[in-house]
Image (cartoon, rainbow over all chains, first blue to last red; front, side, top):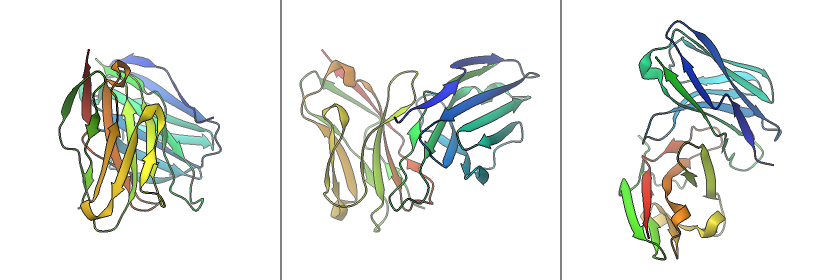
Amino acid sequence: DTEVTQTPKHLVMGMTNKKSLKCEQHMGHRAMYWYKQKAKKPPELMFVYSYEKLSINESVPSRFSPECPNSSLLNLHLHALQPEDSALYLCASSQVGRGEVDTQYFGPGTRLTVL
Amino acid sequence: AQSVTQLGSHVSVSEGALVLLRCNYSSSVPPYLFWYVQYPNQGLQLLLKYTTGATLVKGINGFEAEFKKSETSFHLTKPSAHMSDAAEYFCAVRWTSYDKVIFGPGTSLSVIP
C-alpha cells in the first residue's frame, strides 16, 4: 500500500479564518513533507518532518504552522492567510535512511482558496 | 546551483505515436532520478525511478526512461501514446537520501486523437 491520504479535498477560507489540513500515511514512513503547488508549476517544498521532528522549514511565513502529532499524521495549521496563498497543498511521505534512495509518495492534495 | 531542466513546456503527440519527454540535470555526480505524472486536480504519482544498476528503467503505464550519465539525461518514453496519458509530467532528482528533491518545471503532454 503506497497511499497517502489528505483531507479536506477542497477548502475555501477567509483571511481571518483558522483552518487545518490533515495528512495521513500507514506505510511506516518516518519522513513527511508539505509542498505548495501553484497552477502549471512544480511543487515547492515548505516543511519536512523526520522522526516527528521538524528538520526543514523553507522560510515559510508563520501563518503556516506544521505539526506532526505522531509518525502517521501530519497537519498544517492555517491562520490569517492571504489570497496569494491559494494553491494545491500536497503532502508526501518517504522512508528515512534505509540504505536506498527514499522515494516520496504524494497524496492527492488539498485545493485551498483564500478569499 | 544544481538544477533540472525539461525541454518543452508543452508537447503534443498523436494517439499511437511515440512519446518522448526530455529531462537533463546539472551535475557530474549522478543523482537519483524520478519521473512523476500529475493528472488534473490530483497529486503526483510516481511513474518510475533510477537509483543504481540497469540504466533502462521500466515504469507503470508502459513508460520507460534511460539514464545516460555522459549526457546527464533521463528522458521518458512510451512507444504508443494513449489519450489517458494526457497530463503534466515532472522530472525530479535527489543527490542523496538527505537532500531535497529538485523538480523540473514540468512538461504538459497533450494527446491528439
